[in-house]
Amino acid sequence: MKEKLTEEKVFKDPVHHYIYVQDQTIWDLINTKEFQRLRRIRQLGTSYLTFHGAEHSRFSHSLGVYEITRKIISQFERNGYPDWPKDERLVSLCAALLHDVGHGPFSHSLEEVFATNHEEWTCKILLENTEINRVLREVSDDFPDKVAAVIRKTYPKPIVVSLISSQMDADRMDYLLRDAYFTGVNYGTFDLERILRVLRPYKGKIVVKESGMHAVEHYLMSRYQMYWQIYFHPVTRSSEIILRQIFRRAHQLYVGGYAFRWIPDSLRGLLGDRMNVHDYLKLDEALVQTVFTQWAEERDPLLNDLCDRFMNRRLYKYITIDNPDETLLNEISDSFSSIGLNPDYHMEIDFPFDLPYDVYRLDKKEGEKQEKAPILLLHGDDEICEISAKSDIVRSITGLHQGRYHLYYPAEPLQDSADLLPAHIKRLFNLD
Image (tube, rainbow, N blue to C red; front, side, top):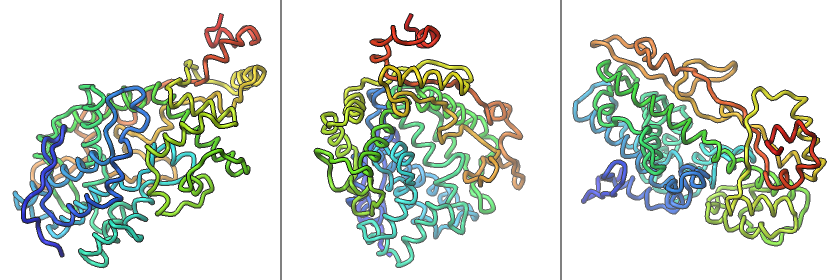
Protein backbone atom coordinates (compact mmCIF):
# COMPACT_ATOMS: atom_id res chain seq x y z
CA MET A 1 0.00 0.00 0.00
CA LYS A 2 1.22 3.50 -0.83
CA GLU A 3 2.37 5.71 1.99
CA LYS A 4 1.40 9.23 2.91
CA LEU A 5 2.71 12.08 0.82
CA THR A 6 5.99 13.51 2.09
CA GLU A 7 4.37 16.94 1.91
CA GLU A 8 0.65 17.62 2.18
CA LYS A 9 -0.98 19.00 -0.99
CA VAL A 10 -3.52 21.83 -0.70
CA PHE A 11 -6.23 23.06 -3.09
CA LYS A 12 -7.70 26.52 -2.54
CA ASP A 13 -11.47 26.19 -2.63
CA PRO A 14 -14.19 28.89 -2.50
CA VAL A 15 -16.53 26.71 -0.42
CA HIS A 16 -14.24 24.84 2.00
CA HIS A 17 -11.36 27.35 1.82
CA TYR A 18 -8.77 24.57 1.70
CA ILE A 19 -8.87 20.96 0.55
CA TYR A 20 -6.10 18.80 1.99
CA VAL A 21 -4.57 15.76 0.31
CA GLN A 22 -2.31 13.60 2.45
CA ASP A 23 -2.41 10.22 0.69
CA GLN A 24 -0.34 9.33 -2.36
CA THR A 25 -3.24 7.29 -3.76
CA ILE A 26 -5.63 10.25 -3.63
CA TRP A 27 -3.07 12.53 -5.25
CA ASP A 28 -2.45 10.00 -8.03
CA LEU A 29 -6.20 9.58 -8.63
CA ILE A 30 -6.70 13.34 -8.95
CA ASN A 31 -4.00 13.42 -11.64
CA THR A 32 -5.50 10.65 -13.80
CA LYS A 33 -6.93 11.72 -17.15
CA GLU A 34 -10.34 10.27 -16.23
CA PHE A 35 -10.60 12.49 -13.15
CA GLN A 36 -9.21 15.55 -14.95
CA ARG A 37 -11.99 15.10 -17.53
CA LEU A 38 -14.45 16.22 -14.82
CA ARG A 39 -13.09 19.76 -15.23
CA ARG A 40 -14.93 19.79 -18.58
CA ILE A 41 -18.32 18.75 -17.19
CA ARG A 42 -20.48 21.25 -15.31
CA GLN A 43 -21.93 20.27 -11.97
CA LEU A 44 -25.31 21.85 -12.69
CA GLY A 45 -25.81 20.92 -16.32
CA THR A 46 -27.78 23.62 -18.14
CA SER A 47 -28.35 25.82 -15.07
CA TYR A 48 -25.70 28.24 -16.37
CA LEU A 49 -28.35 29.39 -18.87
CA THR A 50 -30.47 30.53 -15.91
CA PHE A 51 -27.82 31.45 -13.31
CA HIS A 52 -24.80 32.73 -15.18
CA GLY A 53 -22.41 31.93 -12.33
CA ALA A 54 -23.24 28.22 -12.35
CA GLU A 55 -20.15 27.27 -14.34
CA HIS A 56 -18.58 25.12 -11.61
CA SER A 57 -17.43 21.64 -12.54
CA ARG A 58 -17.87 18.11 -11.27
CA PHE A 59 -14.12 18.21 -10.64
CA SER A 60 -14.48 20.87 -7.93
CA HIS A 61 -17.56 19.14 -6.48
CA SER A 62 -15.75 15.80 -6.31
CA LEU A 63 -12.86 17.40 -4.45
CA GLY A 64 -15.40 18.95 -2.08
CA VAL A 65 -17.07 15.60 -1.35
CA TYR A 66 -13.65 14.11 -0.68
CA GLU A 67 -12.82 16.97 1.72
CA ILE A 68 -16.05 16.64 3.72
CA THR A 69 -15.52 12.89 3.96
CA ARG A 70 -11.93 13.46 5.08
CA LYS A 71 -13.12 15.86 7.78
CA ILE A 72 -15.74 13.41 9.05
CA ILE A 73 -13.26 10.54 9.25
CA SER A 74 -10.63 12.78 10.88
CA GLN A 75 -13.14 13.76 13.54
CA PHE A 76 -14.01 10.10 14.18
CA GLU A 77 -10.33 9.12 14.47
CA ARG A 78 -9.37 12.16 16.52
CA ASN A 79 -12.02 11.34 19.11
CA GLY A 80 -11.18 7.65 19.11
CA TYR A 81 -14.72 6.42 18.45
CA PRO A 82 -14.54 2.60 18.59
CA ASP A 83 -17.44 2.12 16.13
CA TRP A 84 -15.48 3.62 13.25
CA PRO A 85 -13.48 0.91 11.38
CA LYS A 86 -10.14 2.67 10.86
CA ASP A 87 -9.05 0.33 8.08
CA GLU A 88 -11.90 1.68 5.91
CA ARG A 89 -10.43 5.18 5.69
CA LEU A 90 -8.80 4.91 2.26
CA VAL A 91 -11.67 3.10 0.55
CA SER A 92 -14.05 5.79 1.90
CA LEU A 93 -11.88 8.64 0.63
CA CYS A 94 -11.44 7.05 -2.80
CA ALA A 95 -15.18 6.42 -3.18
CA ALA A 96 -15.90 10.02 -2.16
CA LEU A 97 -13.43 11.38 -4.69
CA LEU A 98 -14.52 9.11 -7.55
CA HIS A 99 -18.28 8.90 -7.00
CA ASP A 100 -19.07 11.16 -10.00
CA VAL A 101 -16.29 10.14 -12.39
CA GLY A 102 -18.82 8.39 -14.64
CA HIS A 103 -20.89 11.47 -15.37
CA GLY A 104 -21.22 12.40 -19.02
CA PRO A 105 -21.82 15.82 -20.56
CA PHE A 106 -25.14 17.29 -19.34
CA SER A 107 -25.41 13.86 -17.78
CA HIS A 108 -28.98 13.66 -16.49
CA SER A 109 -30.41 14.61 -19.90
CA LEU A 110 -28.01 12.21 -21.58
CA GLU A 111 -29.00 9.41 -19.20
CA GLU A 112 -32.71 9.94 -19.75
CA VAL A 113 -32.51 9.77 -23.55
CA PHE A 114 -30.01 6.92 -23.85
CA ALA A 115 -31.03 4.93 -20.75
CA THR A 116 -27.53 5.07 -19.30
CA ASN A 117 -26.52 5.39 -15.67
CA HIS A 118 -23.57 7.43 -14.45
CA GLU A 119 -22.98 5.12 -11.47
CA GLU A 120 -22.59 2.14 -13.81
CA TRP A 121 -20.16 4.14 -15.96
CA THR A 122 -18.29 5.07 -12.78
CA CYS A 123 -17.88 1.40 -11.90
CA LYS A 124 -16.75 0.55 -15.43
CA ILE A 125 -14.10 3.27 -15.21
CA LEU A 126 -12.96 1.87 -11.86
CA LEU A 127 -12.83 -1.73 -13.03
CA GLU A 128 -11.72 -1.62 -16.67
CA ASN A 129 -8.43 -0.65 -18.32
CA THR A 130 -8.07 2.96 -17.15
CA GLU A 131 -5.52 5.06 -15.29
CA ILE A 132 -7.86 5.10 -12.30
CA ASN A 133 -7.98 1.31 -12.24
CA ARG A 134 -4.18 1.11 -12.34
CA VAL A 135 -3.84 3.53 -9.42
CA LEU A 136 -6.39 1.61 -7.35
CA ARG A 137 -4.74 -1.72 -8.11
CA GLU A 138 -1.50 -0.38 -6.65
CA VAL A 139 -3.27 -0.47 -3.27
CA SER A 140 -4.33 -4.10 -3.78
CA ASP A 141 -5.70 -6.26 -6.58
CA ASP A 142 -9.20 -6.23 -5.09
CA PHE A 143 -9.21 -2.54 -4.16
CA PRO A 144 -11.02 -1.36 -7.36
CA ASP A 145 -13.80 -3.84 -6.57
CA LYS A 146 -14.07 -2.50 -3.02
CA VAL A 147 -14.42 1.11 -4.18
CA ALA A 148 -16.95 0.06 -6.85
CA ALA A 149 -18.96 -1.77 -4.18
CA VAL A 150 -19.24 1.46 -2.17
CA ILE A 151 -20.51 3.27 -5.29
CA ARG A 152 -23.02 0.45 -5.92
CA LYS A 153 -24.10 0.52 -2.25
CA THR A 154 -23.26 -3.18 -1.87
CA TYR A 155 -20.20 -2.75 0.33
CA PRO A 156 -20.48 -5.04 3.38
CA LYS A 157 -20.04 -2.16 5.85
CA PRO A 158 -23.04 0.21 5.48
CA ILE A 159 -21.31 2.91 7.52
CA VAL A 160 -18.88 3.43 4.63
CA VAL A 161 -21.70 3.64 2.07
CA SER A 162 -23.63 6.15 4.20
CA LEU A 163 -20.72 8.59 4.14
CA ILE A 164 -21.18 8.87 0.36
CA SER A 165 -24.85 7.98 -0.09
CA SER A 166 -27.48 8.69 2.54
CA GLN A 167 -30.05 11.35 3.37
CA MET A 168 -27.27 13.50 4.78
CA ASP A 169 -24.08 12.46 3.02
CA ALA A 170 -20.91 14.27 1.97
CA ASP A 171 -22.18 14.44 -1.61
CA ARG A 172 -25.37 16.33 -0.74
CA MET A 173 -23.67 18.60 1.77
CA ASP A 174 -21.06 19.72 -0.74
CA TYR A 175 -23.36 20.25 -3.72
CA LEU A 176 -25.84 22.31 -1.69
CA LEU A 177 -23.13 24.68 -0.46
CA ARG A 178 -21.32 24.75 -3.80
CA ASP A 179 -24.44 25.24 -5.93
CA ALA A 180 -25.66 28.02 -3.62
CA TYR A 181 -22.29 29.78 -3.85
CA PHE A 182 -22.06 29.66 -7.64
CA THR A 183 -25.70 30.52 -8.32
CA GLY A 184 -25.42 33.49 -5.97
CA VAL A 185 -28.18 32.54 -3.54
CA ASN A 186 -28.08 32.49 0.26
CA TYR A 187 -30.81 30.01 1.16
CA GLY A 188 -28.66 26.98 0.25
CA THR A 189 -26.21 27.62 3.06
CA PHE A 190 -26.19 25.79 6.39
CA ASP A 191 -23.82 25.24 9.30
CA LEU A 192 -21.59 22.49 7.93
CA GLU A 193 -19.05 22.71 10.75
CA ARG A 194 -21.75 22.21 13.38
CA ILE A 195 -23.10 19.15 11.57
CA LEU A 196 -19.63 17.65 11.26
CA ARG A 197 -19.09 18.10 15.02
CA VAL A 198 -22.27 16.23 15.98
CA LEU A 199 -21.86 13.21 13.67
CA ARG A 200 -21.03 9.94 15.39
CA PRO A 201 -20.33 6.36 14.26
CA TYR A 202 -22.70 4.07 16.16
CA LYS A 203 -23.27 0.33 15.71
CA GLY A 204 -22.41 0.33 12.01
CA LYS A 205 -24.33 3.52 11.23
CA ILE A 206 -23.66 7.24 11.22
CA VAL A 207 -25.93 9.12 13.60
CA VAL A 208 -26.37 12.70 14.82
CA LYS A 209 -26.24 13.76 18.47
CA GLU A 210 -29.68 14.97 19.44
CA SER A 211 -28.19 18.35 20.38
CA GLY A 212 -27.37 18.81 16.69
CA MET A 213 -30.96 18.36 15.49
CA HIS A 214 -31.49 22.04 14.74
CA ALA A 215 -28.42 22.16 12.47
CA VAL A 216 -29.86 19.20 10.55
CA GLU A 217 -33.24 20.94 10.30
CA HIS A 218 -31.45 23.94 8.79
CA TYR A 219 -29.70 21.64 6.30
CA LEU A 220 -32.99 20.06 5.21
CA MET A 221 -34.71 23.43 4.86
CA SER A 222 -31.78 24.56 2.70
CA ARG A 223 -32.32 21.50 0.51
CA TYR A 224 -35.99 22.34 0.22
CA GLN A 225 -35.29 25.91 -0.86
CA MET A 226 -32.57 24.91 -3.32
CA TYR A 227 -34.82 22.41 -5.06
CA TRP A 228 -37.62 24.85 -5.71
CA GLN A 229 -35.52 27.92 -6.40
CA ILE A 230 -32.60 26.36 -8.32
CA TYR A 231 -33.01 22.72 -9.36
CA PHE A 232 -36.70 23.01 -10.34
CA HIS A 233 -36.37 26.46 -11.91
CA PRO A 234 -38.72 26.54 -14.93
CA VAL A 235 -36.19 28.26 -17.21
CA THR A 236 -33.61 25.59 -16.45
CA ARG A 237 -36.26 22.97 -17.16
CA SER A 238 -36.81 24.60 -20.57
CA SER A 239 -33.14 24.31 -21.47
CA GLU A 240 -33.08 20.68 -20.29
CA ILE A 241 -36.11 19.90 -22.45
CA ILE A 242 -34.46 21.34 -25.56
CA LEU A 243 -31.26 19.45 -24.76
CA ARG A 244 -33.15 16.16 -24.49
CA GLN A 245 -34.96 16.91 -27.75
CA ILE A 246 -31.61 17.43 -29.49
CA PHE A 247 -30.31 14.08 -28.28
CA ARG A 248 -33.61 12.38 -29.20
CA ARG A 249 -33.65 13.88 -32.69
CA ALA A 250 -30.00 13.06 -33.34
CA HIS A 251 -30.56 9.48 -32.20
CA GLN A 252 -33.67 9.18 -34.38
CA LEU A 253 -31.81 10.49 -37.42
CA TYR A 254 -28.74 8.33 -36.79
CA VAL A 255 -30.61 5.02 -36.49
CA GLY A 256 -32.62 6.03 -39.56
CA GLY A 257 -29.47 6.29 -41.65
CA TYR A 258 -29.33 10.08 -41.92
CA ALA A 259 -26.02 11.36 -43.32
CA PHE A 260 -24.77 14.03 -40.90
CA ARG A 261 -22.55 16.67 -42.44
CA TRP A 262 -20.29 16.33 -39.42
CA ILE A 263 -20.26 13.94 -36.49
CA PRO A 264 -17.29 12.84 -34.36
CA ASP A 265 -16.63 9.10 -34.09
CA SER A 266 -16.95 9.20 -30.30
CA LEU A 267 -20.55 10.36 -30.66
CA ARG A 268 -21.46 7.62 -33.13
CA GLY A 269 -21.15 5.02 -30.39
CA LEU A 270 -23.57 6.94 -28.16
CA LEU A 271 -26.15 7.47 -30.92
CA GLY A 272 -25.79 3.87 -32.04
CA ASP A 273 -26.09 2.41 -28.51
CA ARG A 274 -22.68 0.75 -28.62
CA MET A 275 -20.57 2.96 -26.40
CA ASN A 276 -17.49 1.54 -24.66
CA VAL A 277 -15.49 3.14 -21.85
CA HIS A 278 -12.77 4.42 -24.19
CA ASP A 279 -15.31 6.31 -26.34
CA TYR A 280 -17.40 7.42 -23.37
CA LEU A 281 -14.42 9.13 -21.78
CA LYS A 282 -13.97 11.24 -24.91
CA LEU A 283 -17.35 12.85 -24.30
CA ASP A 284 -17.33 16.18 -22.51
CA GLU A 285 -19.36 19.37 -22.75
CA ALA A 286 -16.82 21.14 -24.94
CA LEU A 287 -17.23 18.42 -27.58
CA VAL A 288 -21.04 18.35 -27.31
CA GLN A 289 -21.32 22.12 -27.68
CA THR A 290 -18.98 22.03 -30.68
CA VAL A 291 -21.23 19.39 -32.23
CA PHE A 292 -24.33 21.49 -31.52
CA THR A 293 -22.72 24.49 -33.20
CA GLN A 294 -22.16 22.40 -36.32
CA TRP A 295 -25.61 20.81 -36.18
CA ALA A 296 -27.20 24.27 -36.08
CA GLU A 297 -26.37 24.26 -39.82
CA GLU A 298 -27.57 20.71 -40.54
CA ARG A 299 -30.05 20.06 -43.36
CA ASP A 300 -32.63 18.60 -40.97
CA PRO A 301 -34.70 21.65 -39.99
CA LEU A 302 -35.76 20.25 -36.62
CA LEU A 303 -32.23 19.41 -35.45
CA ASN A 304 -31.02 22.69 -36.93
CA ASP A 305 -33.57 24.74 -34.96
CA LEU A 306 -33.15 22.86 -31.67
CA CYS A 307 -29.36 23.28 -31.69
CA ASP A 308 -29.61 26.94 -32.59
CA ARG A 309 -32.08 27.48 -29.75
CA PHE A 310 -29.84 25.77 -27.21
CA MET A 311 -26.59 27.44 -28.23
CA ASN A 312 -28.12 30.93 -28.46
CA ARG A 313 -30.50 30.59 -25.51
CA ARG A 314 -33.72 30.91 -27.48
CA LEU A 315 -35.52 28.69 -25.03
CA TYR A 316 -39.08 27.43 -25.08
CA LYS A 317 -41.65 29.50 -23.22
CA TYR A 318 -44.12 27.87 -20.87
CA ILE A 319 -47.67 28.23 -19.64
CA THR A 320 -49.08 26.78 -16.43
CA ILE A 321 -51.85 24.21 -16.78
CA ASP A 322 -53.81 22.88 -13.84
CA ASN A 323 -54.39 19.14 -14.16
CA PRO A 324 -54.13 18.87 -17.97
CA ASP A 325 -56.54 16.29 -19.36
CA GLU A 326 -56.09 14.17 -22.46
CA THR A 327 -58.76 16.04 -24.44
CA LEU A 328 -57.06 19.41 -23.97
CA LEU A 329 -53.62 18.02 -24.76
CA ASN A 330 -54.94 16.41 -27.95
CA GLU A 331 -56.50 19.73 -29.00
CA ILE A 332 -53.20 21.53 -28.40
CA SER A 333 -51.33 18.84 -30.33
CA ASP A 334 -53.71 19.09 -33.29
CA SER A 335 -53.42 22.88 -33.27
CA PHE A 336 -49.64 22.68 -33.27
CA SER A 337 -49.69 20.22 -36.17
CA SER A 338 -52.03 22.48 -38.15
CA ILE A 339 -49.44 25.28 -38.19
CA GLY A 340 -46.50 23.03 -39.06
CA LEU A 341 -45.13 22.28 -35.60
CA ASN A 342 -44.15 18.79 -34.50
CA PRO A 343 -45.94 17.99 -31.21
CA ASP A 344 -43.36 15.29 -30.39
CA TYR A 345 -40.67 17.96 -30.23
CA HIS A 346 -42.48 21.30 -29.87
CA MET A 347 -44.64 20.66 -26.81
CA GLU A 348 -43.81 18.97 -23.56
CA ILE A 349 -45.67 18.75 -20.29
CA ASP A 350 -43.32 19.04 -17.34
CA PHE A 351 -43.97 18.38 -13.68
CA PRO A 352 -41.18 18.69 -11.08
CA PHE A 353 -41.93 15.39 -9.36
CA ASP A 354 -40.54 13.63 -12.42
CA LEU A 355 -37.11 14.75 -11.21
CA PRO A 356 -34.88 12.46 -9.13
CA TYR A 357 -34.73 14.78 -6.11
CA ASP A 358 -36.17 14.25 -2.64
CA VAL A 359 -35.93 16.82 0.12
CA TYR A 360 -36.39 14.08 2.71
CA ARG A 361 -38.30 10.87 2.22
CA LEU A 362 -39.05 7.97 4.49
CA ASP A 363 -41.57 6.14 2.37
CA LYS A 364 -40.83 3.92 -0.60
CA LYS A 365 -42.84 3.58 -3.77
CA GLU A 366 -44.13 0.09 -4.47
CA GLY A 367 -41.33 -2.14 -5.74
CA GLU A 368 -38.65 0.42 -4.90
CA LYS A 369 -35.79 -0.23 -2.54
CA GLN A 370 -34.85 2.54 -0.13
CA GLU A 371 -31.32 3.41 -1.19
CA LYS A 372 -30.73 6.43 1.05
CA ALA A 373 -30.35 5.72 4.74
CA PRO A 374 -32.52 7.98 6.94
CA ILE A 375 -31.12 10.54 9.38
CA LEU A 376 -30.87 9.03 12.86
CA LEU A 377 -30.62 10.94 16.15
CA LEU A 378 -28.62 9.59 19.06
CA HIS A 379 -30.38 10.27 22.35
CA GLY A 380 -28.25 9.76 25.44
CA ASP A 381 -25.72 6.97 25.08
CA ASP A 382 -27.62 4.17 23.38
CA GLU A 383 -31.04 5.23 22.04
CA ILE A 384 -31.51 6.15 18.38
CA CYS A 385 -34.57 7.32 16.48
CA GLU A 386 -35.34 8.64 13.03
CA ILE A 387 -35.23 12.46 13.00
CA SER A 388 -38.86 13.10 12.00
CA ALA A 389 -39.98 11.41 15.23
CA LYS A 390 -38.43 14.33 17.14
CA SER A 391 -38.60 17.24 14.69
CA ASP A 392 -41.81 19.05 13.76
CA ILE A 393 -39.93 20.85 10.99
CA VAL A 394 -38.74 17.64 9.35
CA ARG A 395 -42.21 16.11 9.59
CA SER A 396 -43.65 19.16 7.86
CA ILE A 397 -41.41 18.79 4.79
CA THR A 398 -41.29 14.99 4.58
CA GLY A 399 -43.19 13.98 1.48
CA LEU A 400 -44.35 17.58 1.00
CA HIS A 401 -45.71 18.00 -2.52
CA GLN A 402 -45.97 21.20 -4.44
CA GLY A 403 -45.49 22.23 -8.03
CA ARG A 404 -47.64 22.81 -11.11
CA TYR A 405 -47.77 21.44 -14.61
CA HIS A 406 -45.93 23.51 -17.21
CA LEU A 407 -46.40 23.14 -20.95
CA TYR A 408 -43.29 24.18 -22.87
CA TYR A 409 -43.45 25.33 -26.49
CA PRO A 410 -41.63 27.55 -29.05
CA ALA A 411 -43.30 30.95 -28.79
CA GLU A 412 -42.35 32.50 -32.15
CA PRO A 413 -44.18 30.18 -34.57
CA LEU A 414 -47.27 30.21 -32.34
CA GLN A 415 -47.27 34.00 -32.33
CA ASP A 416 -46.75 34.17 -36.08
CA SER A 417 -49.65 31.79 -36.76
CA ALA A 418 -52.01 32.96 -34.03
CA ASP A 419 -54.79 33.79 -36.50
CA LEU A 420 -54.93 30.14 -37.58
CA LEU A 421 -55.50 28.78 -34.08
CA PRO A 422 -58.88 28.09 -32.41
CA ALA A 423 -60.02 30.84 -30.06
CA HIS A 424 -59.70 28.77 -26.86
CA ILE A 425 -56.15 27.74 -27.79
CA LYS A 426 -55.25 31.38 -28.43
CA ARG A 427 -56.60 32.31 -24.99
CA LEU A 428 -54.70 29.48 -23.35
CA PHE A 429 -51.41 30.76 -24.81
CA ASN A 430 -52.29 34.44 -24.25
CA LEU A 431 -52.29 35.18 -28.00
CA ASP A 432 -55.47 37.29 -28.05
